[in-house]
Amino acid sequence: MTNSTTGSSIEDGLQLRVDAGGAAYLMQGEASSLLLGTNNTERMRIDSSGQVGIGMTPTTRLFSLYSAAAPTLQLVNSTTGTAAGDGGIVWMSGNDMLISNQ
View 1 (tube, helix red, strand yellow):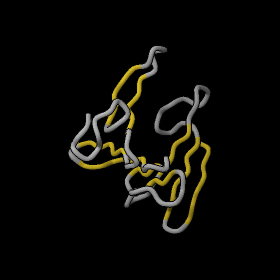
View 2 (cartoon, one colour; view 1 turned 45 degrees about the vertical axis):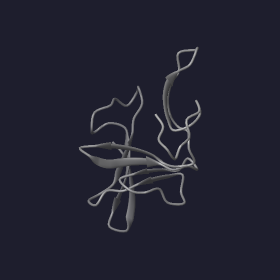
View 3 (tube, one colour; view 1 turned 135 degrees about the vertical axis):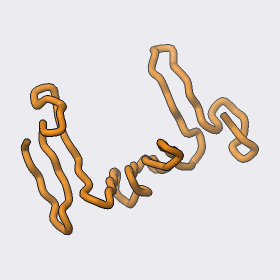
View 4 (cartoon, helix red, strand yellow; view 1 turned 90 degrees about the vertical axis):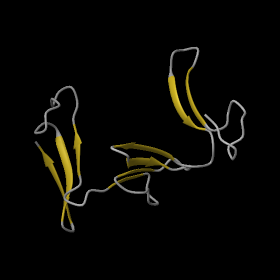
């Protein structure tokens, strides 16, 4: 998909394709961000340098996660299980970062 500012070549605009090996691509062909959202609201952004922001615009870090309440990152694998209480979690409580093995 292209518009009047992206150009119209195969490498311009937003690309949705499958290569000969079966890999699927959702690719931003411009030097601009790729935004993903739900409920008509931006939820995640990958900027043109590859930095990712969930709940916020990416900072100078590779990955930024924001939640107004308590941002929590859950890490699970095939051994831990995948329920809410499984694996390990990293979260913020005020100015403190906490790490817990569930």
